[in-house]
Figure 1 (cartoon, rainbow over the protein chains, first blue to last red):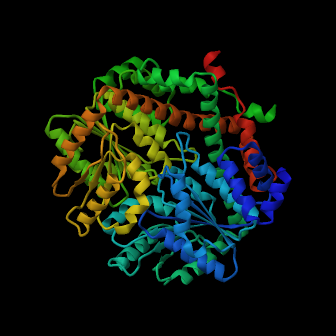
Figure 2: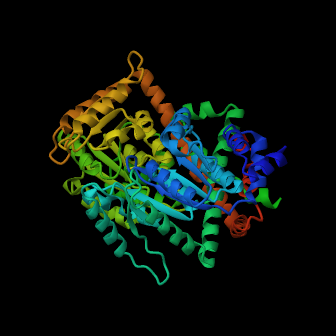
Figure 3: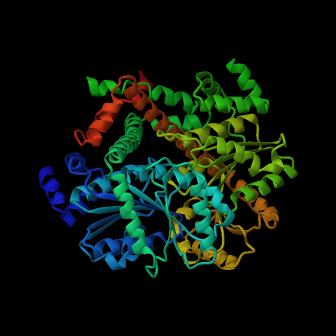
Length: 320
Length: 320
């Protein structure tokens, strides 16, 4: 059965891919086996990360960028991450509203991720969905995220190219986001560029970039103005994305990127699965409730409990 | 030695507390032992979370709130989290600029957290610092965070009361942050309330709140306008914070809060420490580099590797 799923997904079958993603959400063991088989067929998609605060107009921008890729015949997958939303129902409805223009286009596959519980796991889910879309043969996979959180900074490292979308009017506050966005941005996008203050925001970002030391041959993040609603500037943005893609696909850069991506995948999966297994094991042994009561009442401290739990030779599992 | 550190921190010694936090950052084993001893002396501080995007004026608001608490003789600790900043040096400098007014006040203890590596651990560090400040006897501990990310949503659950700070001008985009902020906000703050659109933002938030079903006795998040720069509205905000504090300290609510906090502490610590141990163990056995190369080249898939690594009876470590 696993082989049938793997073959259907590799052939680009939308229903098979959607079913696999749903089964992965539900923790179906067979879905995990399919994903293991599919992994060797990944690594062909161009992965584009788009990060920006709520209100930056990201969804409209993604919609316009998808339009540009579709116009030159590229197939596209979109993973929209909303880590703060506890409503997966909302996310599904969101897909329809979000990209009405592309919703009936078979060349565009959209998946929103919003569900999360105590154990997190959104990064792991994102990696899974990107890998399924990659194995499906999507030319481009777009990861759209609101986050400037720790998990989100890690997850965008699986993208070849990262856009950071800002809107005019941040003023002096641009200093506040300086360090974080410099780390992840390959291209800055000043969206809603018709608004007051757009030129100043653009100059501020350019000054910020110019204060950095770049080595010969290193990529210097450009600042691109767009008006996603009218589509103005989006063509130029997609050309710039293509320039950065070429830069990443230089041999040494690509090798570095692949190792970075593999590291993020391994660590994010490990983090989620180790927590799931440890908590699941405590629950199965009927220990979890008592531990939480003991910590809440300060009869025990969580530090000592955790040190006991982590005491294990992990490497032995691989060597043995 | 541990006892001397514990006694000094409990007596409120700033130097001892600062040294302990630094040693925790550096992974000094003795510091971990001190923290275990200190945990039973926590649970006395009122913990206040303040969340909002960069540019919302959070730092100025925190400064003004600290001023209000100091005016009535309360001691205050502030933990400022900037998960996107890779520069801990910047964070330290930031402390001085951030709260010049309170920097020389012994009743105010400020700690910025920004360092993060591949393994994350910012949530764990935040919990540690909050616990040290709590054990020091600070009346109020404020957690300031920019995040709407997954880790940040979890971490604010250790706060008794959570403010979500928004600025006017989001317009229709307020829908975009609807689900996430409803989940964490006990009080909404419309800061920069003198700006155009403040009334509309306030009304939008109030409508959003009113669409929810609240049970008898359940807290309904109010929307409070402030101008943090001039201090306007901050007195009223602090009164509202106090009302919410009283609501949380009703017996049943407090018990629920303590269990929720214990769960977040246990899970966040487990997540960080399990990953550290697993990765550290792979490195000590010289396996990590080879695994990453194998994944990058698709000779192995990360899913299968992770399933082998997590296969362990964790509960046995506690029972045995």
